[in-house]
Length: 365
Image (cartoon, rainbow, N blue to C red; front, side):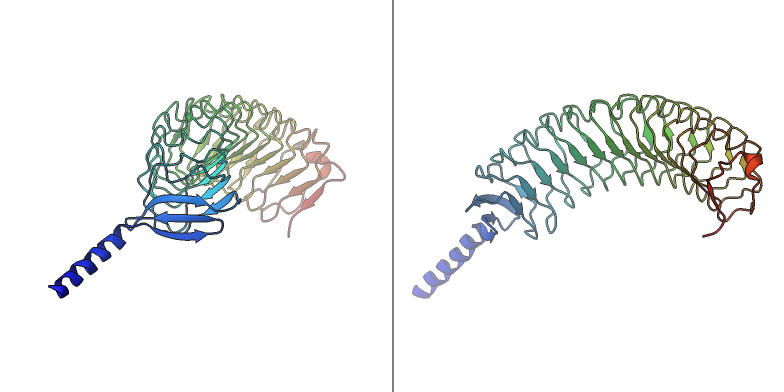
Protein backbone atom coordinates (compact mmCIF):
# COMPACT_ATOMS: atom_id res chain seq x y z
CA UNK A 1 0.00 0.00 0.00
CA UNK A 2 2.80 2.39 0.93
CA UNK A 3 4.57 1.71 -2.37
CA UNK A 4 1.33 2.30 -4.30
CA UNK A 5 0.77 5.60 -2.47
CA UNK A 6 4.28 6.71 -3.28
CA UNK A 7 3.76 5.94 -6.97
CA UNK A 8 0.42 7.77 -7.02
CA UNK A 9 1.95 10.80 -5.34
CA UNK A 10 4.83 10.77 -7.80
CA UNK A 11 2.47 10.63 -10.78
CA UNK A 12 0.36 13.44 -9.35
CA UNK A 13 3.47 15.53 -8.81
CA UNK A 14 4.57 14.98 -12.40
CA UNK A 15 1.12 15.86 -13.75
CA UNK A 16 0.96 18.93 -11.55
CA UNK A 17 4.41 20.02 -12.68
CA UNK A 18 3.37 19.68 -16.30
CA UNK A 19 0.32 21.89 -15.78
CA UNK A 20 2.16 24.60 -13.89
CA UNK A 21 3.65 27.48 -15.89
CA UNK A 22 7.39 27.67 -16.27
CA UNK A 23 8.82 31.06 -15.33
CA UNK A 24 12.08 32.62 -16.46
CA UNK A 25 13.73 35.91 -15.70
CA UNK A 26 14.28 38.03 -18.79
CA UNK A 27 16.15 41.21 -17.89
CA UNK A 28 13.85 43.09 -15.50
CA UNK A 29 10.83 40.88 -16.15
CA UNK A 30 9.54 37.47 -15.12
CA UNK A 31 7.98 35.65 -18.07
CA UNK A 32 5.77 32.61 -17.48
CA UNK A 33 4.42 30.18 -20.07
CA UNK A 34 2.58 26.86 -20.05
CA UNK A 35 3.81 23.60 -21.49
CA UNK A 36 1.42 24.20 -24.41
CA UNK A 37 3.26 27.41 -25.27
CA UNK A 38 0.74 29.89 -23.89
CA UNK A 39 2.19 33.07 -22.41
CA UNK A 40 0.40 33.20 -19.06
CA UNK A 41 2.03 36.03 -17.14
CA UNK A 42 4.58 38.80 -17.43
CA UNK A 43 5.66 40.62 -14.28
CA UNK A 44 7.87 43.68 -14.11
CA UNK A 45 10.52 43.61 -11.38
CA UNK A 46 12.12 47.00 -12.02
CA UNK A 47 11.92 49.79 -14.56
CA UNK A 48 13.00 48.74 -18.03
CA UNK A 49 10.81 49.66 -20.99
CA UNK A 50 12.02 47.02 -23.48
CA UNK A 51 11.35 43.27 -23.43
CA UNK A 52 12.48 40.58 -25.88
CA UNK A 53 10.66 37.27 -25.43
CA UNK A 54 12.73 35.04 -27.70
CA UNK A 55 12.89 31.24 -27.96
CA UNK A 56 9.93 30.51 -25.69
CA UNK A 57 8.17 28.52 -28.42
CA UNK A 58 5.01 30.49 -27.72
CA UNK A 59 1.81 29.67 -29.58
CA UNK A 60 -0.58 32.09 -27.90
CA UNK A 61 -0.97 34.84 -25.30
CA UNK A 62 -3.49 34.46 -22.52
CA UNK A 63 -5.68 37.57 -22.15
CA UNK A 64 -4.44 39.47 -19.13
CA UNK A 65 -0.94 37.99 -19.26
CA UNK A 66 0.57 41.47 -19.07
CA UNK A 67 0.04 43.03 -15.64
CA UNK A 68 0.05 46.75 -16.38
CA UNK A 69 3.75 46.77 -17.18
CA UNK A 70 5.44 49.94 -18.40
CA UNK A 71 6.74 48.46 -21.65
CA UNK A 72 7.41 50.74 -24.58
CA UNK A 73 8.94 48.11 -26.90
CA UNK A 74 7.97 44.43 -27.08
CA UNK A 75 9.57 41.75 -29.28
CA UNK A 76 7.77 38.40 -29.68
CA UNK A 77 9.52 37.26 -32.84
CA UNK A 78 12.51 34.90 -32.88
CA UNK A 79 11.91 31.39 -31.60
CA UNK A 80 8.12 31.60 -31.26
CA UNK A 81 5.20 30.35 -33.38
CA UNK A 82 2.31 32.48 -32.20
CA UNK A 83 -0.85 31.72 -34.19
CA UNK A 84 -3.83 32.10 -31.89
CA UNK A 85 -4.36 35.62 -30.60
CA UNK A 86 -7.65 37.02 -29.32
CA UNK A 87 -8.74 40.51 -28.24
CA UNK A 88 -7.32 41.11 -24.79
CA UNK A 89 -3.95 39.52 -25.56
CA UNK A 90 -2.23 42.89 -25.24
CA UNK A 91 -4.27 44.27 -22.35
CA UNK A 92 -2.08 45.79 -19.63
CA UNK A 93 0.32 47.53 -22.01
CA UNK A 94 -0.94 51.12 -21.88
CA UNK A 95 2.44 52.64 -22.83
CA UNK A 96 3.43 50.28 -25.65
CA UNK A 97 4.69 52.08 -28.76
CA UNK A 98 6.59 49.35 -30.64
CA UNK A 99 5.29 45.81 -31.19
CA UNK A 100 7.29 43.26 -33.20
CA UNK A 101 5.44 40.07 -34.15
CA UNK A 102 7.41 39.01 -37.22
CA UNK A 103 8.18 35.35 -37.99
CA UNK A 104 5.05 33.91 -36.36
CA UNK A 105 1.69 32.76 -37.76
CA UNK A 106 -0.52 35.57 -36.46
CA UNK A 107 -3.96 35.87 -38.04
CA UNK A 108 -5.20 39.48 -37.89
CA UNK A 109 -8.72 39.90 -36.48
CA UNK A 110 -10.79 42.98 -35.62
CA UNK A 111 -10.10 44.21 -32.09
CA UNK A 112 -6.78 42.39 -31.73
CA UNK A 113 -4.91 45.61 -31.01
CA UNK A 114 -7.70 47.51 -29.28
CA UNK A 115 -5.76 47.88 -25.99
CA UNK A 116 -2.83 49.62 -27.69
CA UNK A 117 -4.02 53.19 -28.34
CA UNK A 118 -0.48 54.62 -28.25
CA UNK A 119 1.16 52.07 -30.57
CA UNK A 120 3.39 53.74 -33.17
CA UNK A 121 5.18 50.82 -34.86
CA UNK A 122 3.75 47.40 -35.70
CA UNK A 123 5.65 44.65 -37.48
CA UNK A 124 3.71 41.66 -38.82
CA UNK A 125 6.24 40.45 -41.41
CA UNK A 126 6.44 36.76 -42.32
CA UNK A 127 3.23 35.56 -40.69
CA UNK A 128 1.64 33.85 -43.73
CA UNK A 129 -1.15 36.43 -43.63
CA UNK A 130 -3.49 36.03 -46.61
CA UNK A 131 -5.92 38.86 -45.92
CA UNK A 132 -6.57 41.61 -43.38
CA UNK A 133 -10.18 41.88 -42.19
CA UNK A 134 -11.81 45.29 -42.10
CA UNK A 135 -11.46 46.78 -38.64
CA UNK A 136 -8.16 45.13 -37.77
CA UNK A 137 -6.42 48.48 -37.28
CA UNK A 138 -9.38 50.61 -36.20
CA UNK A 139 -8.03 51.42 -32.73
CA UNK A 140 -4.48 52.27 -33.85
CA UNK A 141 -5.01 55.97 -34.35
CA UNK A 142 -1.40 56.79 -33.39
CA UNK A 143 0.31 54.16 -35.56
CA UNK A 144 3.05 55.64 -37.74
CA UNK A 145 4.77 52.57 -39.21
CA UNK A 146 3.23 49.27 -40.40
CA UNK A 147 5.37 46.44 -41.80
CA UNK A 148 3.55 43.62 -43.61
CA UNK A 149 6.44 42.19 -45.66
CA UNK A 150 6.83 38.51 -46.58
CA UNK A 151 3.20 37.48 -46.29
CA UNK A 152 0.67 35.94 -48.70
CA UNK A 153 -1.55 38.96 -49.31
CA UNK A 154 -2.93 38.98 -52.86
CA UNK A 155 -5.53 41.73 -52.60
CA UNK A 156 -5.99 44.81 -50.41
CA UNK A 157 -9.70 45.65 -50.18
CA UNK A 158 -11.07 49.11 -49.55
CA UNK A 159 -11.07 50.11 -45.88
CA UNK A 160 -8.25 47.70 -45.00
CA UNK A 161 -6.30 50.56 -43.48
CA UNK A 162 -9.23 52.35 -41.88
CA UNK A 163 -8.23 54.03 -38.63
CA UNK A 164 -4.59 54.61 -39.59
CA UNK A 165 -4.92 58.36 -39.95
CA UNK A 166 -1.39 59.01 -38.62
CA UNK A 167 0.44 56.31 -40.60
CA UNK A 168 3.53 57.64 -42.40
CA UNK A 169 5.27 54.41 -43.49
CA UNK A 170 3.72 51.28 -45.04
CA UNK A 171 5.68 48.31 -46.36
CA UNK A 172 4.06 45.44 -48.29
CA UNK A 173 7.18 43.91 -49.82
CA UNK A 174 7.21 40.27 -50.91
CA UNK A 175 3.45 39.75 -51.13
CA UNK A 176 1.81 38.26 -54.26
CA UNK A 177 -0.18 41.43 -54.93
CA UNK A 178 -1.03 41.72 -58.64
CA UNK A 179 -3.18 44.84 -58.94
CA UNK A 180 -3.15 48.29 -57.36
CA UNK A 181 -6.37 50.32 -57.70
CA UNK A 182 -8.00 53.54 -56.52
CA UNK A 183 -9.03 52.11 -53.13
CA UNK A 184 -5.97 50.06 -52.24
CA UNK A 185 -4.42 52.81 -50.13
CA UNK A 186 -7.51 54.74 -49.10
CA UNK A 187 -7.60 56.05 -45.54
CA UNK A 188 -3.91 56.97 -45.35
CA UNK A 189 -3.85 60.78 -45.56
CA UNK A 190 -0.41 61.22 -43.95
CA UNK A 191 1.52 58.42 -45.65
CA UNK A 192 4.98 59.59 -46.76
CA UNK A 193 6.71 56.28 -47.59
CA UNK A 194 5.24 53.29 -49.44
CA UNK A 195 7.04 50.10 -50.51
CA UNK A 196 5.48 47.32 -52.58
CA UNK A 197 8.61 45.55 -53.80
CA UNK A 198 9.28 41.96 -54.86
CA UNK A 199 5.57 41.46 -55.46
CA UNK A 200 3.67 40.47 -58.60
CA UNK A 201 2.17 43.79 -59.65
CA UNK A 202 1.19 43.81 -63.31
CA UNK A 203 -1.38 46.62 -63.36
CA UNK A 204 -1.96 50.07 -61.90
CA UNK A 205 -5.52 51.27 -62.29
CA UNK A 206 -5.90 54.97 -63.17
CA UNK A 207 -5.54 57.23 -60.13
CA UNK A 208 -4.24 54.40 -57.95
CA UNK A 209 -2.20 56.75 -55.78
CA UNK A 210 -4.40 59.84 -55.96
CA UNK A 211 -5.37 59.71 -52.27
CA UNK A 212 -1.72 59.77 -51.09
CA UNK A 213 -1.21 63.52 -51.26
CA UNK A 214 1.66 63.51 -48.72
CA UNK A 215 3.66 60.64 -50.24
CA UNK A 216 7.37 61.43 -50.71
CA UNK A 217 9.01 58.03 -51.32
CA UNK A 218 7.59 55.23 -53.49
CA UNK A 219 9.39 51.91 -54.00
CA UNK A 220 8.02 49.55 -56.69
CA UNK A 221 11.10 47.50 -57.58
CA UNK A 222 11.08 43.82 -58.61
CA UNK A 223 7.56 43.59 -59.98
CA UNK A 224 6.11 42.65 -63.38
CA UNK A 225 4.61 45.98 -64.39
CA UNK A 226 5.20 45.97 -68.16
CA UNK A 227 3.68 49.37 -69.03
CA UNK A 228 3.61 52.73 -67.28
CA UNK A 229 0.48 54.47 -68.52
CA UNK A 230 -0.45 58.14 -68.57
CA UNK A 231 -1.14 59.68 -65.17
CA UNK A 232 -0.26 56.51 -63.30
CA UNK A 233 1.09 58.64 -60.48
CA UNK A 234 -1.54 61.37 -60.59
CA UNK A 235 -1.99 63.13 -57.27
CA UNK A 236 1.52 62.58 -55.92
CA UNK A 237 2.38 66.26 -55.98
CA UNK A 238 4.90 65.93 -53.12
CA UNK A 239 6.67 62.78 -54.34
CA UNK A 240 10.45 63.15 -54.08
CA UNK A 241 11.80 59.64 -54.82
CA UNK A 242 10.42 57.02 -57.23
CA UNK A 243 12.07 53.68 -57.96
CA UNK A 244 10.65 51.18 -60.48
CA UNK A 245 13.74 49.11 -61.21
CA UNK A 246 13.84 45.46 -62.30
CA UNK A 247 10.09 45.42 -62.94
CA UNK A 248 9.90 44.23 -66.58
CA UNK A 249 8.86 47.68 -67.81
CA UNK A 250 8.87 47.73 -71.61
CA UNK A 251 6.90 50.89 -72.39
CA UNK A 252 6.70 54.30 -70.77
CA UNK A 253 3.69 56.11 -72.22
CA UNK A 254 3.45 59.83 -72.76
CA UNK A 255 2.35 61.48 -69.50
CA UNK A 256 3.30 58.57 -67.26
CA UNK A 257 5.11 60.96 -64.92
CA UNK A 258 2.76 63.89 -65.27
CA UNK A 259 1.94 65.67 -62.03
CA UNK A 260 5.21 65.03 -60.16
CA UNK A 261 6.66 68.55 -59.79
CA UNK A 262 8.71 67.72 -56.68
CA UNK A 263 10.33 64.50 -57.92
CA UNK A 264 14.14 64.63 -57.61
CA UNK A 265 15.15 60.99 -58.20
CA UNK A 266 13.67 58.60 -60.77
CA UNK A 267 15.12 55.10 -61.12
CA UNK A 268 14.07 52.89 -64.05
CA UNK A 269 17.12 50.64 -64.10
CA UNK A 270 17.15 46.98 -65.16
CA UNK A 271 13.97 46.99 -67.20
CA UNK A 272 13.24 46.20 -70.85
CA UNK A 273 12.74 49.72 -72.16
CA UNK A 274 13.85 50.07 -75.78
CA UNK A 275 12.65 53.57 -76.71
CA UNK A 276 12.53 56.89 -74.86
CA UNK A 277 9.77 58.91 -76.48
CA UNK A 278 9.75 62.66 -76.93
CA UNK A 279 8.24 64.38 -73.90
CA UNK A 280 8.46 61.35 -71.64
CA UNK A 281 9.72 63.40 -68.71
CA UNK A 282 7.90 66.70 -69.29
CA UNK A 283 6.80 68.22 -65.99
CA UNK A 284 9.68 66.81 -63.94
CA UNK A 285 11.17 70.24 -63.39
CA UNK A 286 12.79 69.27 -60.06
CA UNK A 287 14.36 66.00 -61.24
CA UNK A 288 18.01 65.78 -60.25
CA UNK A 289 18.93 62.17 -61.05
CA UNK A 290 17.57 59.92 -63.81
CA UNK A 291 18.63 56.26 -63.85
CA UNK A 292 18.07 54.17 -66.99
CA UNK A 293 20.89 51.64 -66.66
CA UNK A 294 20.63 48.06 -67.92
CA UNK A 295 17.72 48.42 -70.31
CA UNK A 296 17.42 47.73 -74.04
CA UNK A 297 17.44 51.37 -75.12
CA UNK A 298 18.41 51.85 -78.74
CA UNK A 299 16.21 54.83 -79.65
CA UNK A 300 16.09 58.17 -77.86
CA UNK A 301 13.82 60.61 -79.64
CA UNK A 302 14.54 64.32 -79.93
CA UNK A 303 12.86 66.05 -76.99
CA UNK A 304 13.08 62.94 -74.80
CA UNK A 305 14.65 64.96 -71.96
CA UNK A 306 12.61 68.11 -72.53
CA UNK A 307 11.61 69.86 -69.33
CA UNK A 308 14.39 68.46 -67.13
CA UNK A 309 15.60 71.92 -66.16
CA UNK A 310 17.15 70.75 -62.84
CA UNK A 311 18.73 67.50 -64.03
CA UNK A 312 22.31 66.92 -62.92
CA UNK A 313 22.91 63.21 -63.62
CA UNK A 314 21.63 60.98 -66.42
CA UNK A 315 22.80 57.38 -66.42
CA UNK A 316 22.34 55.19 -69.52
CA UNK A 317 24.89 52.46 -68.74
CA UNK A 318 24.53 49.07 -70.46
CA UNK A 319 22.11 49.89 -73.25
CA UNK A 320 22.20 49.71 -77.06
CA UNK A 321 22.58 53.38 -77.93
CA UNK A 322 24.40 54.04 -81.21
CA UNK A 323 23.34 57.64 -81.96
CA UNK A 324 21.87 60.64 -80.20
CA UNK A 325 19.53 63.10 -81.96
CA UNK A 326 20.46 66.73 -82.50
CA UNK A 327 19.59 69.06 -79.64
CA UNK A 328 18.83 66.19 -77.25
CA UNK A 329 20.21 68.07 -74.24
CA UNK A 330 18.91 71.53 -75.12
CA UNK A 331 17.81 73.38 -72.02
CA UNK A 332 19.58 71.02 -69.63
CA UNK A 333 21.78 73.77 -68.27
CA UNK A 334 22.55 72.00 -64.97
CA UNK A 335 23.57 68.65 -66.43
CA UNK A 336 26.81 67.65 -64.73
CA UNK A 337 27.36 64.02 -65.77
CA UNK A 338 26.17 61.77 -68.57
CA UNK A 339 26.97 58.06 -68.19
CA UNK A 340 27.15 56.09 -71.46
CA UNK A 341 29.30 53.13 -70.43
CA UNK A 342 28.76 49.92 -72.45
CA UNK A 343 26.84 51.32 -75.41
CA UNK A 344 27.63 51.21 -79.12
CA UNK A 345 28.14 54.96 -79.01
CA UNK A 346 31.75 55.88 -78.19
CA UNK A 347 31.83 59.62 -78.95
CA UNK A 348 29.42 62.55 -79.25
CA UNK A 349 29.49 66.02 -80.79
CA UNK A 350 28.70 68.31 -77.87
CA UNK A 351 27.58 71.15 -80.10
CA UNK A 352 25.18 68.97 -82.09
CA UNK A 353 23.46 67.46 -79.06
CA UNK A 354 23.74 70.80 -77.17
CA UNK A 355 25.52 69.33 -74.17
CA UNK A 356 26.69 71.93 -71.60
CA UNK A 357 30.42 72.61 -71.84
CA UNK A 358 31.06 71.63 -68.22
CA UNK A 359 29.15 68.34 -68.37
CA UNK A 360 31.22 65.17 -67.99
CA UNK A 361 30.59 62.31 -70.44
CA UNK A 362 31.65 58.91 -69.14
CA UNK A 363 32.17 56.12 -71.68
CA UNK A 364 34.06 53.70 -69.45
CA UNK A 365 34.45 53.01 -65.76
